[in-house]
Each structure stands twice: as structure tokens, then as C-alpha cells.
Image (cartoon, rainbow, N blue to C red; front, side, top):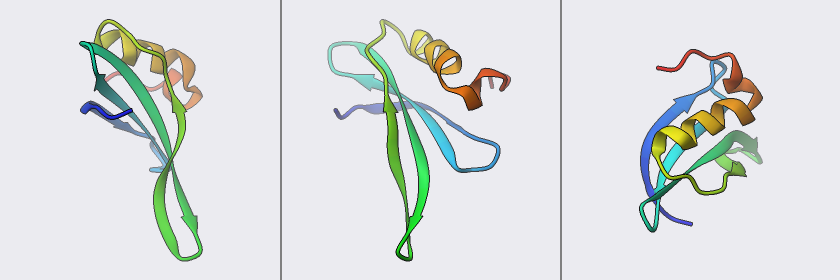
Length: 76
């Protein structure tokens, strides 16, 4: 599922990121990726793709509730 990135939050250790994305049909979702090093290559690998939400704010709120590393992180 493609979409336009609205917001990006990186974990403190730099190994995870959450992206709020605009999805088709005026809806939004969040994706979580994990930074992987394998066979001399480093890349982001998807670890979670949410359902759809009515707003970017709702998608971000859901990410902050569902992703353990984001639960206690201050929104910025």
C-alpha cells in the first residue's frame, strides 16, 4: 500500500521508526519499520502496518498506544 508520508518518529536507539501515512480515499495509517543489518547490507524492514483511520492524528494516537517503544515517548 503506497501513500504520502505525513510524520516520522524515530526511536531513541535509531532501530525503529513509525511513519504516519496518507492512504487512498482520504484515510490514514501508521507503519512501523525496524532497521536491519544483514549480509553487509542495512535496510528498513516493515514490522507493522495498521488499519485505516479517519485522520493523521488518530493514526498517530493508535501508534502511540500499540507500539511499546512509543507508549512513553512524549509527542513532538
